[in-house]
Amino acid sequence: MASQVPPSKNPTPLADRPLPPSAALSEPADYKNTFRGRMAASKYADPCEAASKASLACLERTHYNRDECLDFFAAYRECKGKWIAQRKEDARKGRDTV
Image (cartoon, rainbow, N blue to C red; front, side):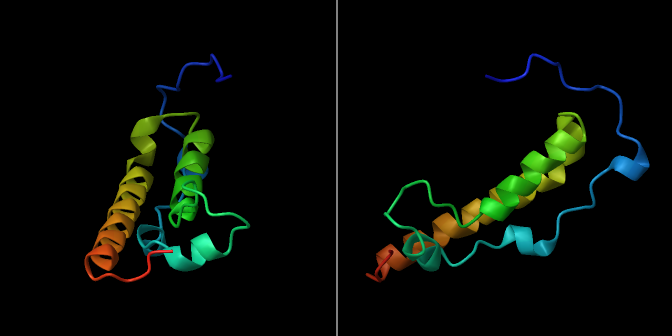
């Protein structure tokens, strides 16, 4: 169950703010290796897991002040977009997707 504490409206002190996301978070991991590395094929395998965890960590660190984590959300969206585009291109070319 989610916490009932409302998000903070106060800006996070400069010393406690997370560093901006790295460019590596915008790039998905090789999804074929991500799926092969699991015991069973799962629709929940996520090559953008690092970006997802970084955005959640940012939220926790800023006491759920969403405005301070927009860069992390953008990096995750960009990563997911690249991953979906890569899978579509592989399917179009008839490559093995998993």
